[in-house]
Image (tube, rainbow, N blue to C red):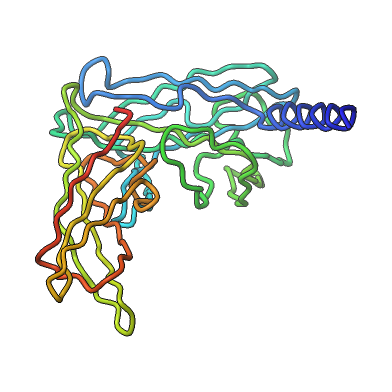
Length: 291
């Protein structure tokens, strides 16, 4: 039994090492704070080829916004940043610095959030590609990205497809792995302020239950990673009975464990027993944040 357990542990370790090697590249740092002007409006990232083969990499920037459900939305943000080089071709163990410069407004009243996306692509070319910055075409069509709360490694098997011509050559690009990092641009003295804005109520017909939607907004100037939520909701039922509900993080999946971006509004629906009087709802809450 012990031998079988040990053998499984060894196989698992080998699988982890092989997977890490198959990622093909490393990217750091995964999160970076920019200032809208001055020396800190320019930051440097590092991309390293950790494979035994040449790899092609492209780097691009997107916006990062939250819908009221907490879902992340991204759009191209190339006009707000200069990325150099945005396309790389790296030999084994070769590292390349990538400089990113903010080109947006020189003064911001709050922090703005973006994504830096680093993609390893498989390149097949009819001509031999040399080690040059334009080896991976940065104009290849982008595919949808998986959601990530913050600066986390996006490698691990995200595969998409696309193709694009470069000059007179026929080049096909297959997206292999992707890192999705966090970029924040804003003033140095900003801080988060997550407040409860109010609630909406919908009575469930045919059963004694109410759908209470709580609305929260980060009115502050900086993002906040919410670790946990504890709340007490008090209300009167339609027949005047006082009720109280103790709520924890499991009742707030759109907020707890998530990155609440500056300026974002999130609406969290709760299903509670009883027909509640909408004008009687009171909420006491505490958010534990990482920053």
